Image 1 (cartoon, rainbow, N blue to C red):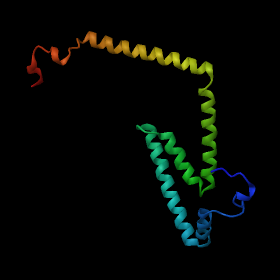
Image 2 (cartoon, rainbow, N blue to C red; image 1 turned 90 degrees about the vertical axis):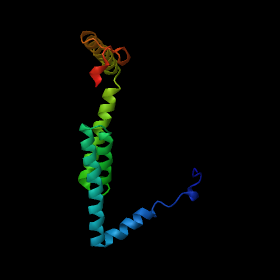
Image 3 (cartoon, rainbow, N blue to C red; image 1 turned 90 degrees about the horizontal axis):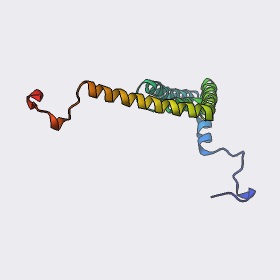
Image 4 (cartoon, rainbow, N blue to C red; image 1 turned 180 degrees about the horizontal axis):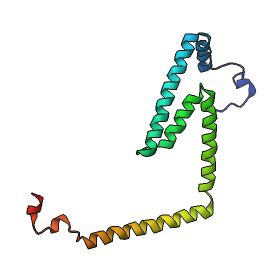
Length: 142
């Protein structure tokens, strides 16, 4: 639903339900500290999960960015880190979309794939690859 008239738009000064909830928590020191500890725990867990996924299968970069975004809701240092991460991602995107580098990377990927395929075929030829249904001596498998 699009807002067509200024009179239909909500007032800019009126906080939403989350802002009212957060202000209620900020007024109470114990609740505010508990909230910040919870945000830190969840954000740090997602961030560490993203770091782990950098060396294991998974979307590591996404985990890191989401973890920083969670932490940035409460901590200024995380806002700065998230800002730097966004800038680095923007620079990487610009570098990846450079036509000369994109062409070079495509050519290198094709050559690497061809060399890898040739190495696999050479290995199979040298070590006499035999399909399972062409094995003459089935006692080998027992």
